[in-house]
Structures are given as C-alpha cells and as structure tokens.
Amino acid sequence: MTRDQAYNLLTKYLTNKVLVKHSLAAEATMRTLANYFGEDEEIWGMTGLLHDADYELSRGNPKKHGKLLFEKEKDLDLPDEIIHAIKAHNYQHNKIKPESKMDWAMACCDELTGLIVAETFLLPSRKLKDVKVEFLMKRLKQKDFEKEADRANLFLCDKELKIPLIEFVTMTLTAMQNVHEALEL
Picture (tube, helix red, strand yellow):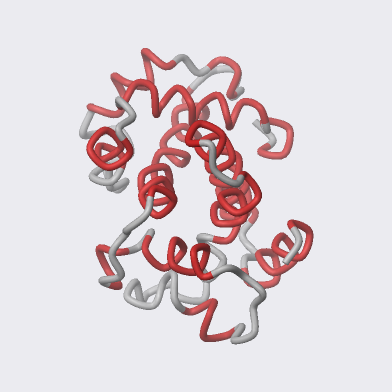
C-alpha cells in the first residue's frame, strides 16, 4: 500500500477533520521515532497514519477500536507489523499487547499529539511554533489540563522505549511543528 492509498483509506472511514489531522500528527511523530531508532520510516509512518482509521466506526465500542478496520477491509496490503501495532495501540481495551518498539511508540505518542494540539489552542497565536517544551512538560503534570486524556501510555516512553519523557515530548513536538501546515496550526 502506498502512502496515498493509506491516506485515501483513512479518509474513507474518518470524516472528522480533527481526527484526520491527529492521524497526520501521529504519522509525523512515528516517522521521527523510526528515524531515531534506525527503522523504516514508511512502515512506522503508515502505522501512525492509519492507527485511528476505525475510530468513528468503533465509537461507543472501545474493544473494537484498532480491530474494526481489518474486519471491514479484509484484503489490506499491509505488513503484519503495521496491523499488530495498530491493534496494540488500544491494548487497554482490546487486550492485544504491544510487543515491538513500533507498537510501544504508537501507544506512547497517541495521546501526546492531542495534548500538544490542546496546548496550542491555549496560546494567543494558536501556532505550534509557539509551543515550548518546558511549558508543555508542566501542563502534562496538571490533572485539570485535558483531564480526559489518558497519560499512562505517554509516561511509559522511558520504560518501554528508553527515551526520557522530555526527549520524547521534544521529538513529538518537533515532528508536529515540521508538518504544521498540514495540521493547520
């Protein structure tokens, strides 16, 4: 599957523009993490791009999220490692455990991209270029900041990926800043 085909598949199932942008942010982050680990950027990027493709389909049924895309699209031309990482990013609900670095990278960065966007919207400029890592680190620890966001996976970056939290946040923010035009931020 090419990147264009993956994007078309994503937008076939996701109609919410915010969710599409979230997927673009996850794609950029996963590409950055692939580069960091010396892994295949295309495979990791495709994982980030498609990880929430079934989000609207599975709304109200979190046990299906991550799996439903593969039930709907039985003949997807994707490597098994991408399929597993997409399923495993929702392991708290669907019980498919992350195993590889790619699995954990997807699970760890998923909520962080949303938290970075939320921080961006609090700034007068509403621009990613103005988000500062130091302030974002303080926000992540504030329980009243985006309290519905589950930070548990984010804080596993050190244990599972051997990347200190501040470095992980910096990489994710930088990746998102590099695609700010696509994110319209």
